Length: 70
Image 1 (spheres, rainbow, N blue to C red):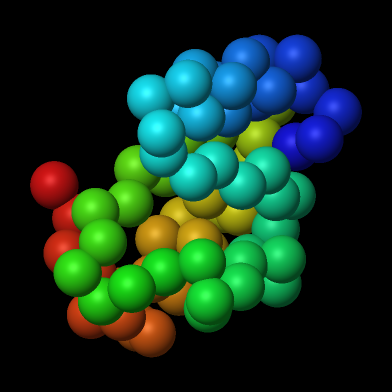
Image 2 (image 1 turned 30 degrees about the vertical axis):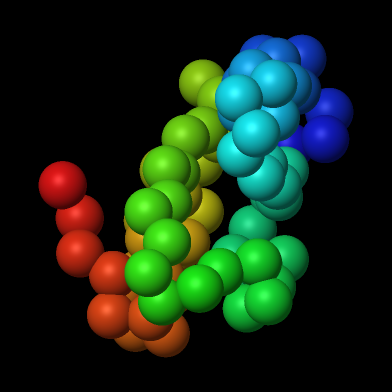
């Protein structure tokens, strides 16, 4: 979430390593152009993020890009 200082910090850390980071509140905010089929994606969430939203994002990536979960 844009409103979470913990999430902001996670995004900042990703960007300092040259990785893209996107702060979203729900799956409808994902954009296909953020991803390539060969990407490795880390999905992380702040403590207050509803688990349902996290799982919706993972399911979207699986359906849209054939992602696997480790």
